[in-house]
Length: 293
Image (cartoon, rainbow, N blue to C red):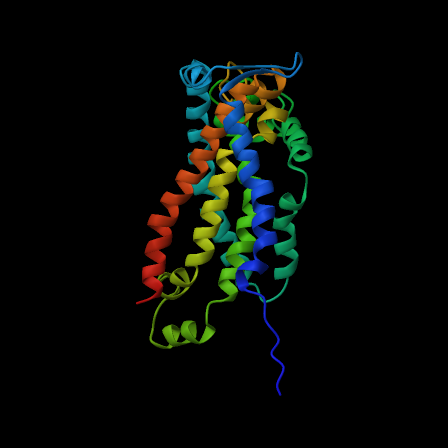
């Protein structure tokens, strides 16, 4: 007689993961949706049902429109520069015969550091008149006092965001470069392909997953930027550097407008999910099709 040991169904093994997902992701989103429908006062403990009034009040305000535009500008200023600079740095480190580990750690330091603390140092660098930026780049470009300028405050914040994201992107690209088959590069070189041709036809297609992942993460970071705005400019001057995440904090925490803050949270969540879906459906799908040829 043989004993048969009944194996648990695979679905049962996933139950703890589903429960954890529901508690940490689904439940908070549902709470935010409910709060967006109420005029909740945490000090008095009162909650009046106002339906969609919070949406109309927040989405039609000038400060929300300004924050939305600033967030889009910040994304445009940081994501392309981050990807381009990171790719060049990663290619440079990958080509080194020695010292690659040292430079990889150097570029990853901003990621391991607390961004709020680093933003304090950057605020000192951008300090008007006596800051390092004004004393160097400012003299060349003829501009100064970036953080108190309505046109330069957001680019200054974007510099810090790019600096912080480059380290992460470099590590991702280096991981992708290490997965490129060296025999393909050698075969291309023997066939007479130049450096650019080898990169474009061999290295670049192999970097597809790393590029898509890095693009999604850097875009997400750009949409939810907060730390450097809070430390360096506090959304000023005249809301010229206010982003959606900073407006969310200002509404929900500083002014205790829980309903309004919940609306901005839902908008930010929808933006991140929508942009991510578009990127996966365009760039990600194109690379997937190219990899299955």
